[in-house]
Length: 146
Ligand SMILES: Cc1cc2nc3c(=O)[nH]c(=O)nc-3n(C[C@H](O)[C@H](O)[C@H](O)COP(=O)(O)O)c2cc1C
Image (tube, rainbow, N blue to C red; front, side, top):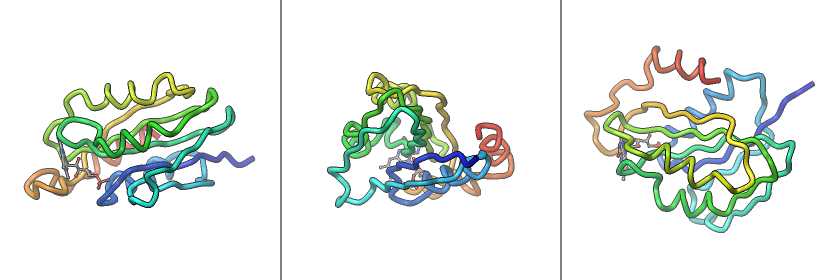
């Protein structure tokens, strides 16, 4: 029997998207739907997921927070006891309370949060940060998370 999950992400420079793909490749799951909420065209995306659906949701950290655009878009997603896994990426500077914030945004929206994780990637604005990340050790951690 095949297991399926849905990918949803805000990922302007694709690092978060790539980490989500890596996580899925370590699981016994296939992606049956993918929603890229980065594009302005998708700003009104809405979904009300069913009980048996599993979602992997990703966003980068901006200024130690969930980016406002991601927050606005994720706020339109709802579940019906659907399972959700929350994933963030950051550029190795800091992530402050962003994981807690992400949890709070997605909590009480009909989801059962079954996993939450954060991973270092290259910093897309400060080129001296996150050099060569993710590295082999990071990939081991991603595999463990999967
Ligand atoms: C406006 C902005 C703010 C950022 N703030 C942080 C930060 O507070 N801490 C950090 O470690 N990285 C920070 N970064 C780096 C991103 O979190 C990192 O490059 C992330 O992987 C980008 O994800 P994406 O490729 O999916 O867009 C920031 C990047 C941008 C563009």
